[in-house]
Length: 58
Image (cartoon, rainbow, N blue to C red; front, top):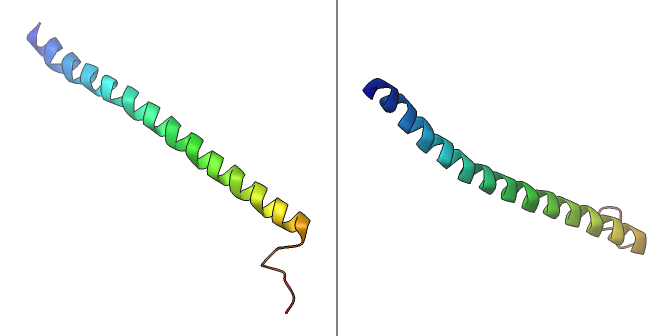
């Protein structure tokens, strides 16, 4: 019985840690995708207004 507990208890702790890490990873993924979407929106909005800094003629 003791060897089983010695193997299972750390796995339960690892599982609990991975659940919290998973929630943090999904939060970071959502924030990253939001920033990418915002950047693409701003790039398209600037291009539509003719204010693109990359192709502005001197």
